[in-house]
Length: 185
Ligand code: IMP
Ligand code: MG
Image (cartoon, rainbow, N blue to C red; front, side, top):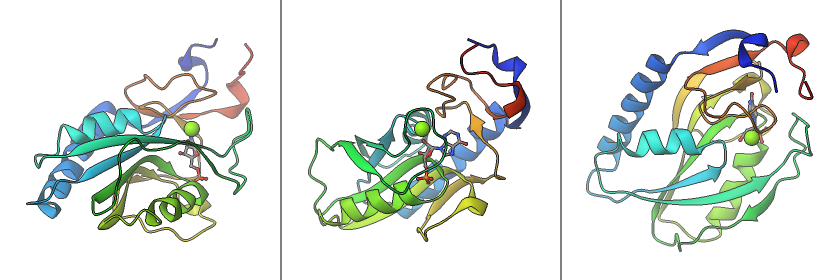
């Protein structure tokens, strides 16, 4: 396994910038959901680091739940548009004010599929909060109500986002120099 310093092209978003922006999003959500109990639905696994930081910056009472989807084949980095729900929610979301918490919206296929799936369960409201928006790669129109950062079309890792399942624990968002990254090394 490579040390990330070997393929890190640049740190796109620092730990301080993440902390500051997540606090702002938490404050914004707290204002918007005053008097409500938002239900934060996190898509495993990339969204967990963002979720756990974000929920502690939300001052209104809130609840959380998790779901998982699979969209990429093993090792692939392109969404196929074929998104499967592999782990369903534990809690009923009917009449709940749901906020879908995602690490990154890329093509948009994942969020689009999950939104369609959640809508069938009749939440009172349904919004999307993503840490990162790789807007140049969008292939389907999806609503984003809360966005941490818009980023260029680069493959990123850290703060929950993985490179072949590794490096999720890094406290910053870095981008990969593909020529220097060797997954099997
Ligand atoms: P979409 O369906 O193309 O919008 O893909 C969204 C999912 O792809 C995210 O939830 C991530 O798991 C993954 N993904 C997209 N871009 C990146 C990236 O740059 N780094 C790590 N994961 C990514
Ligand atoms: Mg992923």
